[in-house]
Image 1 (spheres, rainbow, N blue to C red):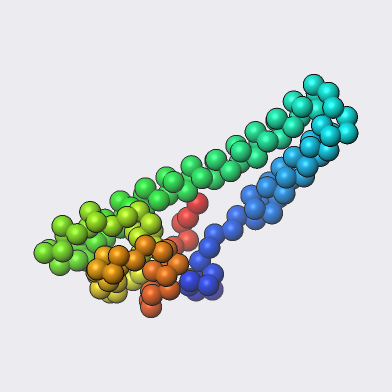
Image 2 (tube, one colour; image 1 turned 45 degrees about the horizontal axis):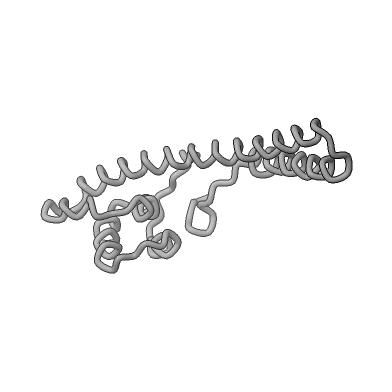
Length: 142
């Protein structure tokens, strides 16, 4: 199946449909335990359940932050290769969010789309992605 705006979001079934629900159930069970059988052990269980959820969420956020940094570097290199030399000074104007959205644009449309994003000061990832006509598949995402 070809990747496009409608299907490009990454769902990791083991994380989104198993790990997070199990951790949420554990948190709910721990809250119930504290509310109905208050003790040091139930409080510790609640704290541990909350810490596990935070651990899972932060691990995902950290991986996505590293991915965004790699995308920033990759896009700066692509733009340097594809934009006219007199436009290279503008590459530093892009935000990480703009570059992350633009990564799906084909090489043929990237220079024009990049110029439009900067000129019109577009920052919304969704609206930038929706402007892409020739989607470049990215299957190596966290």
